[in-house]
Amino acid sequence: MSFNQSNLRLLTSYSFYIAFIISILGLALLVADFGFNQSSQFQIYLNTCYFIVLIVGISTTLLRYIFKYKSLKVSVLIFDSLTILLTLAILIAHFFGEEATQHIATLYDDNWVKLAIILTFIREFSEQNISYKRTFLNPAQLFVLSFLIIILIGSLLLMLPNATYNGISYIDALFTSTSAVCVTGLIVVDTGSYFTTFGQTIILILIQVGGLGILTFASYFSYFFKGGETYENRLTLSDMTGSKKIGEVFSTLKQVILITFSIELFSAVIIYFTLDKTIYQTFIERAFFSVFHSISAFCNAGFSTLSNGLFDNGFRYNYSLQLVIIFSFVLGGLGFPIVVNLLKYIKYFFKKKFLFYSGKEQLHQPWVLTLTSRITLVTTAILIIVGTILFYLNEYHNTLAEHSGFGKIVTALFGATTPRTAGFNTVDMSALNFSTVLLVILLMWIGASPASTGGGIKTNTFAIAVLNFLSLARGKTRIELFRREIADISVRRAFAAITLSLIVIGLGIILISIFDSEKTLVSIAFECFSAYSTVGLSVGITSNLSIYSKLVIIVIMFIGRVSMLTVMIAIFKKVKQQNYRYPIEEITIN
Image (tube, rainbow, N blue to C red; front, side, top):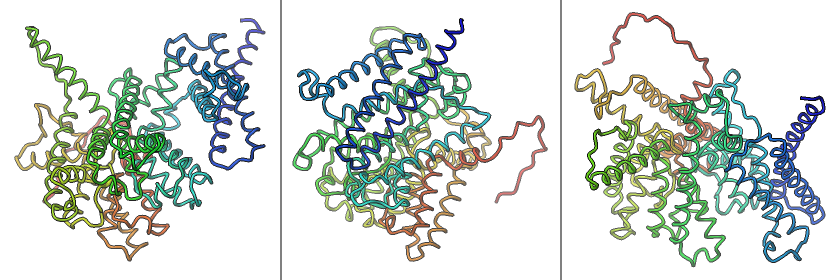
C-alpha cells in the first residue's frame, strides 16, 4: 500500500470517528430540544445542526461502502439504503418547505428530522468497535456497571424541565429512574399526572432498556451492522446471556429482541382495541397508552399512566384489558430461554402430529423440553392456580365483592399473578385482608423465572428448595426429577439466592424501621419485599418515606434487579479451582 493510500485510509478512519462524535452531539441536542423550551431563533440554530449531523451521517455511510470498509451484507445494505433514502427525503422536504411535492410533504414535520437523528446515531454507534475486556471488567462487573450508568443517565433526563410539569427533586428522579431501569414500578410521584408525555417516554425507554439490558441492544446492533464479533466479546456475552454455546450468543440475542418486540407489538394492538373510546378519544392518546402498558407489562415493570393503576375508574372492570396484561407479564416472567424452548416444543408437537397422520413412524422421542423449562412451567402453573384459589377465597367478600362472577375470577387471577414481579393492581392494595397481604408477600418473594424480566428469588430456586427438603425427608442423597438429576451447584446457588435475599430484605426492614419508625412493620416489610423482587406493588407508604428510607429502597431495587449473587461475584476476586480436597465431615444441623 502506497503512502498516499495509507494516509487516505487513516484520514477516512478519523472521519468515521468524528462522524460518531457528531452523531452523539446530535443526540444531545435532540435531548435538549425536547427537554428545554426553545426560542424561535435558537430553534433555527438547532435545525441547522440537525441538517449537518444528517449530511455527515449519509456521507460517512457512503464512504464505508466506497472504500469497502463494510462487507455487502444484504440486510445491512437494505437498512442503510432505506435510512439514507428516508433522510434525503426529509432533507428535501425541509429545504423546499411547504412547497415540497405532495409525496413527501408529510415529512416536513420536525419529528421526522428527530427520527433521522436517532437512526444516524444508531448506525454510527453500531459501527464502533465495542470490546468487553475481561482483564479489565469481568461479566458481572460489566453487567452491574451498565445498570448503574443507565440509572444515572435516566435520573438526569427526568430532571429536564420539560420532563415534569412542576419540577422534581433529584432523589425522586433517581428513585423513579432506578424503579424504571430495575423494572420495579414503585413510585414516589404519580407517573400520569406528574410527568409530561416527554417524561413518560423517558420512563418507557428506561423500562425497555432495563428489561432487556443495554448490553443486549448494543451488542446485537454492533453484530448486525458489522456481521461479526471477537471471541472475547462472544465469551463475555455468553456469560451474561446464559448461552451454553459461544457460537449461539448472537442468535440468542436476536431471539430475545425478536420475541420481546413481537409480544409487545401484539399486546399493544390488542390493548388498543380493548380501550373505551370515551376515555381516550384521539388515536395518539390510545396508542401511547397501549404501547406504554404493553412494554411495562412484558418487562414486568408495573408502571402505569393512570393515577390508581388499573384500579382506576373505567379500567377495573375492563376484564379484556386485564387478561391481555396478564398474558404479557406472564410471558415476560417466564424468561426468554423458556419461551424459546416452549416454541420449539410446540413446533415439535405439531410436527409429531403431522408425521402421525401421514403414517410415518417416529424412531425416537427427543428431549425437547429441557429440565429447566419443565420445572419452570410446572412451578409457575402451581403458583398461579393455588394463588388464584387462595386470593379468590380470601377476598371474595372483601375487594372482590364489587365484581361479577367472571369478574371475580379474572380479578383473583390478576391478584395472584401480578405479585410475581408484574406490579399492576386492579384492587385497592391497602384494603386487602391480612392473610392476603401475607400471600402477596410470599408470591412477591418467589417472583418470576430465571433469565426473565422479573425479579424475586425465582421459581426454579423455590422449586429446588422444596425438592431438596422432600428428598431429605425421604432419605435420598440426590434430587431427581423427570428422570434427571439436579446438579449440586444448582442446589448451592438456590440456597445462596434464598439466604442473600432474606439478608438484604431483613437489613432493609431494619433500616427503614429506624428512619421511619412511625410506619407499621407489615407495611415496611411489604415495600422491601416488593422492592427486592422488583414488583412495584405498594400499600401506599412509598411516597411518604424519608430521604434515607428512599435511598434504602433504591439500593434494594438495584440489588434485586442484578441479584446479590451477581454483586458479590463482581466484588470478590474469583479463586482458581484447586487440585486437592480436604477430608469430608458432616456438620450437626438439627
